[in-house]
Image (tube, rainbow, N blue to C red; front, side, top):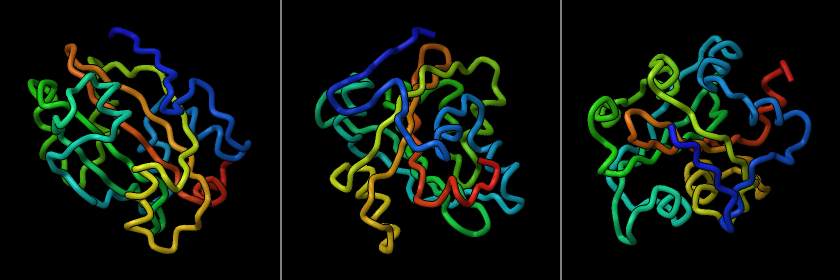
Length: 185
C-alpha cells in the first residue's frame, strides 16, 4: 500500500493530544470493533445511513475527488450496553467501489471492522486524529442524531484502508464518556 501521510490544513494530525483516558482507544491499531466486543457483551451496530452523497471537503481532498462528486457513505453507531459509544463514518469513491470492496454497499448492520481485519489483503494506512468542534460537519451529524450531546469537542480518528489499490476512508468519532464507560482505561 502506498503510505499516505497527511497532516493538512483541515486539522488532522499524526499524534493525538487527547487526555490520558481516551488515548489508548484513539491509538488502537487493531480492530476497534473487536475491542468494543471485548468490552461490551451486547455490542451491536446500528445503521444510520448508507447512500451516495457528497463527502465532506477534507474527505474529498484526501480521496482526490472532483468537487460535486458523490461517494458511497456509510454511517453507523457502534453500540455497547445499549448506548452509542462510537460514530463510524466510511467513505469510498465510486472508482474504488469495485472488486472485493463492492460488497461494502450491502453491509447493513454488519460491523465493517470485522470484515476489514478478517481480510489479510487489506492494508491500513496511518492513523490521524482531530478534535472536532461543534462547527465540523461530522460533529453536526452526530449532534443531529443525539440532541442531548453536550457542546464539547469530540475526538475522532481516521485512516485509509487499501485493497488492490482501491481506498476506503474510515473515521471514528468517540462519544462523550466512552472512555470512562470502557472501564479498562
